[in-house]
Image 1 (cartoon, rainbow, N blue to C red):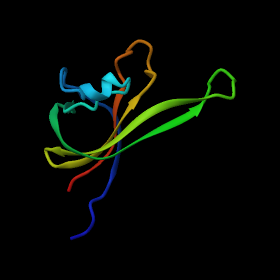
Image 2 (image 1 turned 180 degrees about the horizontal axis):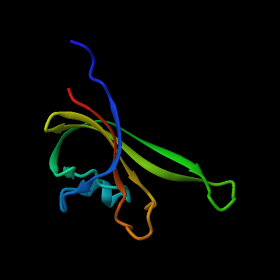
Image 3 (image 1 turned 90 degrees about the vertical axis):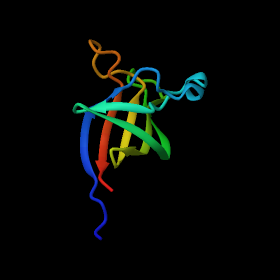
Length: 108
């Protein structure tokens, strides 16, 4: 069987309210949603494969580094492996809640 092909998506996902990881939120981190919707389909997170963070330079000229994104690679139902991330700062000031994104996915 050939390996699953990862496909870039780059689209917003909608976490189902009340399904976020409360322990992570208590630590000041984003709570990985237990369920989320994308393109009209609700996905359930079955397991976390790995998590990591990325940082970047200050956008105002100082030498400081800032945490930009929290990344999660998850297994879902319907069956997929998805890489999702949480933006620490919303991209669109008109939609400050648009912080969860589906980066890529593969089926299988």
